[in-house]
Structure formats: structure tokens, C-alpha cells
Image (cartoon, rainbow, N blue to C red):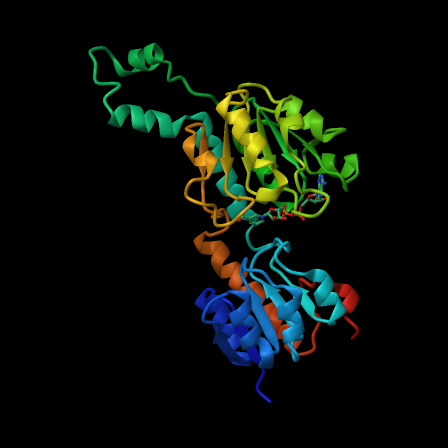
Length: 330
Ligand SMILES: NC(=O)c1ccc[n+]([C@@H]2O[C@H](COP(=O)([O-])OP(=O)(O)OC[C@H]3O[C@@H](n4cnc5c(N)ncnc54)[C@H](O)[C@@H]3O)[C@@H](O)[C@H]2O)c1
């Protein structure tokens, strides 16, 4: 009998074609729980981007064998319920490493070259005075920072962090240090990263701090006032991991009081964030709508990897990126 794969939202055509070759494909009218509960009744597989897969959805999927996560983070999926109902979960952990790393580099450069401020200053006439432009730049105080020789501090030294470390050491001659709660110091060292003995050491040492831990009960609120207070006033914080990892109120205070130089935020505790989010009122922060992985290449790789994972399970084959091997009985 033809299998049915339910998608909460469309993914790249390349991935949808892989599914169409093996099964019937249906896209839900919207990714909300109520709609998905109805549509999942006769589905063998579910593919989601970042919409929530609750235990009620999993329970309603009487034929459900696999949930595919188009992306890396799993905090939107009730993994306990998936285990309980024997449903395999697959994701795409390798697909967006490069894209997130590039995004982090883009924001580091944006912040230290003060692109927002200088673009705005030029457009609003601040440089419309007699004198040489370089002279005015110095006079008006728009000097910028180099990455060269600065220290990058990594919170979590996994795949994305390592790619950033590689670019920063090879491309910008930066020093890179990092803290990872689950990796031995020699493993961190082998990745070209100087191991820090604690999270706090990263915040004390680094000029750029980039966050790369998953959102779990153990990392929720991991970074707050205590860590932000340790940062140099010239240092920047970049969060492209998950909103809940950094306490947004504490970050807002640190930026408002200028106890840190700036921040780049791609992820929010509540997504989508309201248009009156306090961070949007500040000039020393660059905000992006969870877009780090939305590149041309990553969208194809995520769609292809999740489709292949789901189709493997439907064929009874062990998928490459199985999140919960404990349920795999073959
Ligand atoms: N903004 C985006 O679009 C986007 C895209 C992809 C991934 N992400 C986020 O980035 C995160 C990191 O991705 P990755 O591919 O590098 O993951 P990864 O699993 O390769 O690395 C995560 C690292 O964090 C470490 N870690 C876990 N808990 C920790 C803690 N309490 N303290 C210190 N270290 C801890 C782990 O040991 C691991 O080495 C993902 O979990 C996801 O939430 C965001």
C-alpha cells in the first residue's frame, strides 16, 4: 500500500521529489497542532521544520513510523513521546553547519566594522563636512575593530563551533578558546581550540563569544547576568544557537548599559518575537529572524537529508541520522 508522508510546510523541491518517488506527499494546511492532529491520522511519516511536534500529535499518528526534522535542533520535538510510541526521529545535523558558521562570521564582521552605524551616519549627513573622509572618521569617532589577533570564545565545541574556529584561525589569525561540558580537553584541543576550564573563563577571556549548545533543560538560561558581567566592555556576544540559552532580559540590560559592546541575535526565546521586542530598541545589537541556516545550499541539503532519512525508515532501512537508536529493533 502507498505510504503517506505529511509535511507541515513545503521544503526544497529536491527533497519533495525524493519523497514523491517513494510515497504520497501531503502538505498540511498550516503547521498548528489542531490541523496536524487531523492530517496525521493516516500518515506513515511526518516532516517538520521548527513547528512543534507534541505528544498529542504523535499519539494521533496511529500509523506513524518516523518524524523527520528539517534542521538540527530537536527542542521542538517531544522525544520522550516518540520513544514511548516507538517512532523513529531523524534530523539533518550536517546540512547547515557551513551556513551557520558563515552567518556567525558575517555578524562578527558586521559588529566590529560597525556597518549599521557607519552606513547610517553617511546617509544622514554626518560626513557631509569639509575635510578628508579618513580625517572625519577619526574626528567623529567611527574607528572600527579588526578580527586579527582577537580571541573568539566558543560555548559548546561541536560541529558548527569547530567550523567557525577553523575559519577564524586560518582566515583571520584569531586565537580560539572554548568550553564544552561533555568533551575532554584533549578532544577540544585537537579541534584547534584552547580548552577553558569553565564557562566563565570563556566570558572573561574572549573578544567575541559565540554560543553553540543545544537547548536542553541543562542549557536553558545557561548564559545570564553572571556571565555577561564578566565580559570585556569591548566584547560582543553572538547567539545563533537557541533563544532560551541566553537570558534575554539580562542581555538587554548589558547592551543598554553598554557593559558589553554589542550582540548578534538570530534566535529568540519566543519565536516569532513580537515586533516590540526590547532588543529591537537598541542600536548595538543586530537581530535576524532565525535565518542562519536559510542559505541556498543548506536548504537543499536539509531537504535532501530529511527526505532520505524518512524514506529509509519507511523502507525498513536504518537511517543515517537516527536520533533515537533506542527504538530501532532491526
Ligand atoms: N540559527 C540556526 O538557524 C541554527 C541552525 C543549526 C543549528 N542551530 C543550533 O546550534 C546548535 C549547535 O549545533 P551543532 O551542529 O554545533 O551541534 P553539536 O551537537 O555538534 O554541538 C553541540 C555541543 O554542545 C555541547 N554542549 C551541550 N550541553 C552543553 C553545556 N551545558 N555546556 C557546554 N557545552 C555543551 C555538546 O557537548 C556538543 O559538543 C544546535 O543544537 C541548534 O540548536 C541553530
